[in-house]
Length: 99
Image 1 (tube, rainbow, N blue to C red):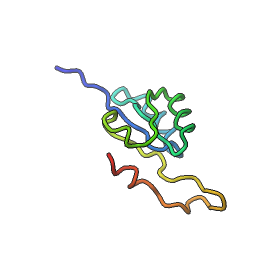
Image 2 (spheres, rainbow, N blue to C red):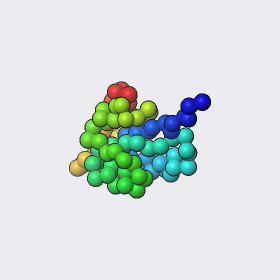
Image 3 (cartoon, rainbow, N blue to C red):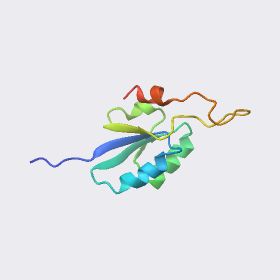
């Protein structure tokens, strides 16, 4: 019988849920984090380093072929100058659509 390979997961946006999810997934041998992306590349890199994620991508679509599923950890950009948190449109559908 063939050995089951872990489910390869990609994190699309880190805040606010990406870090707690990575902590939970770290204890699950049937899944592994394979890719990370965030609106802010430095945030994605820091997240990947912390959770030993081997690939950071410039665009979410670059995960295609490298993941079996994605988690959307946030989906909303932080507020810009003069904006209030929650004013910007939610990006969940746009980010999920390629997958």
